[in-house]
Image (cartoon, rainbow, N blue to C red; front, side):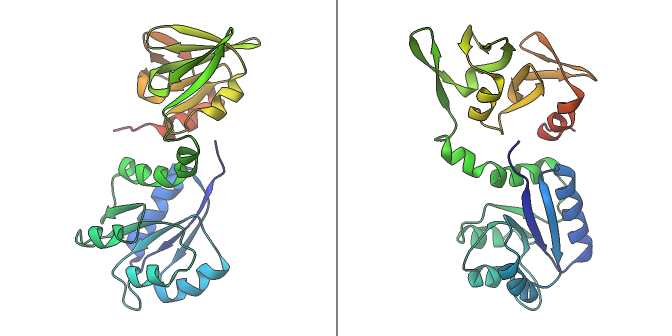
Length: 231
């Protein structure tokens, strides 16, 4: 996976702050989580402690979240959190990443918002992450990411299973992993990468995808479970 994020939670309600902190910790995507209960104090703190992402409450007594946004010269990614849905429109005028309505309870919705930040740069670098070209014999063949079901290491080659055929390419699984969008594909074993959206079921040691059983290594299982939606 790519580098972990740093974030600040700016929220004057201790209960809401605790919930957001717990959800952030659950994702496993953050290397540091700072909690600030005053927006006015946060202005100075952020100058000396830049972060990748701010979870920002709007309604605070000393300085509103939107006023704080106006004061920032170098804006990180912002996820607005408010109990009042009317602020959603105001928030997006400031190009925030997402808006979450309090009380924030839905982990999947929370993770979706964080992933917009986590994978933003990679998505831009990969031109919306729709396709890539692979060399098959003397041809360069275009593969749409959504058509790839899984990728398997096979000696000095990789086998790319698409919805209708297998392409054998001279490459490594590591190189292929670096080219695939992280929000769509996950490593589940030293020999397998899979398309998350194609998984049909998972048990303690295997998953099924397109009627094929693929082993799950303990090394990668925790990351897999964090990347899927579980009811």
